[in-house]
Amino acid sequence: MSNTYLAKSAKSMPDSSNGPRQPSAITAQALAREERKENRSMLLLLTPALVMVVVLLILPMCWLAFQSVQTEEGFSLVNYVRIFQERIYWDTFALTFKISFMVTVLSIFLGFPIAYAASRLQGFWANLVLICVIIPFWTSVLVRSYAWLVLLQRRGLVNQTLIDLGIIDQPLNLMHNTTGTVIGTLHVMLPFMVLPLYSVMRKIPQDLMQASESLGAKPFYTFRRVFLPMAAPGVMAGSILVFVICLGFFITPELLGGGRTILVSMLVQRNVELYHAWGAASAVGLVLLFVVFLIFWGINRFIPIERILGAR
Amino acid sequence: MKMLANLRHIRLSQVLFTVLVAAILLYLILPVLIVVPMSFSEARFLQFPPKEWSFRWYEAFFNSLEWMAASKVSLITALVTTVVSLPIGMAAAYAINSSSLRIVRTLQIVLLLPMMVPIILIAAGVFFVYARIGLISTLTGLILAHIMLALPYVIIALLAGLRNFDMSQEMVARSLGMNRFRAFMAVTLPQIKPSLVSATLFAFITSLDETVVALFISGGDNQTLTKRMFTALRDEIDPTIAAISSILILASLLLVVIAGRNKPQ
Image (cartoon, rainbow over all chains, first blue to last red; front, side, top):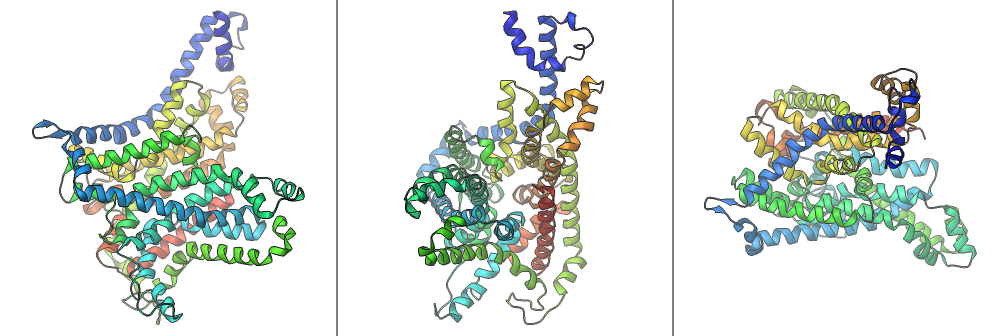
């Protein structure tokens, strides 16, 4: 018994301040006391941060949960039933998932070549590629939404260019609809895909591809059987990050969707700000939260959450 | 590039790949770059390229009491958020790094929650609480919410530094008679400076960029720049936004440079 105690306490042994002075007096009991003291002080260090998160995040969530099942007649699940029964709620969830899925798939297809190029290039060119990803990443989402509002408007640069090139005759409706939402959202999400992908691809040794080719594999076969499986964790981390952020994204869809592409986040915002319908807002928000947690929980077995979030 | 160079017979695909990468990079960078020349346009309506050049939108921004007040609120909030969230985050990151307790691992996930919970829900929750305790439209309320939002970024950045640091150095300082806090300040902190810098940048930018929570809880004299910009963009596109955006882009370029110099490896 005391042996296991000693073994467990061995790690914290150097912490004991009275250790060097009177080594003969160290007993299992004293060590255990030191360890308890150490644990207490570590928990104490965590306290301020925990208080912030508990008071401003966890308690409010509990409050919302309470609101969502509370009506004038007492406990009721009417707010949750509404999500499944009323068309507008159901459609909003469906559209949110559709757009999130589209943006995730598109960001894989657009993000993969960039990350690949950045990981295989060297020096100036690699930096150039990364800078083109990082500058938008650090630029305010509002600024980027503004840029897209200007670019995508009826007489905007995109329509003008397409007309000048003779590709179209009439300007296209590129914003205040789903197209605008997807273009703007994809622009915000792409760095979230490229950065984790790049950090995984950079670690794939070049020798492996050369080995595969020297053994007679065609380039595409090498790519598919050697490179792709090793890049898969990056694709996975990036996709989860993009999909989850998309599910709750508000600013860009609100500005570029022009009130016509209603997503779950807008449903929450409108229910709170316009209708003061806390029950409905809470229920919608908590269903969203449940989906997000389900995704994180599922992925946590393959990639630790901290690593996915750390990619930001 | 060696691999590609070996495959002379697929030159065409190499060219296509380069074009593809260039096109995607343009999609990423062009919208950011295009805002700057537009901010110097004379016209009331947005056009590109501008026909006449002027500083009128910059004048409009710097001469507007509302925009100036909003900028001040945003800057103060971001500064205070950074100054407060760094020590709180540092304490938490230190504890997570040093403790082997099982509960600390769980608490670590709890501390990452502000990054996982959809921001719109956080905004609704904070609004709900603030409405009851009278913190709506106050600077204090805004700063407290932003500290909570910045904490996970600060903790992740600092943890990355602490994990690469050999804690036995701190032990040595303590065995030589320094108390734990002094040993940390004298030995550990100077050596994790790069992650301290990135934690600072993350905290500052998280607060400065934050829009959704500010939309719900900031108001009156304490509206943030982001809230004013969002409202202006939703109602009518005012070219003053182009000037503000250019200033913000310049600021983020500056941050990219600082962050780039920060990691020489």
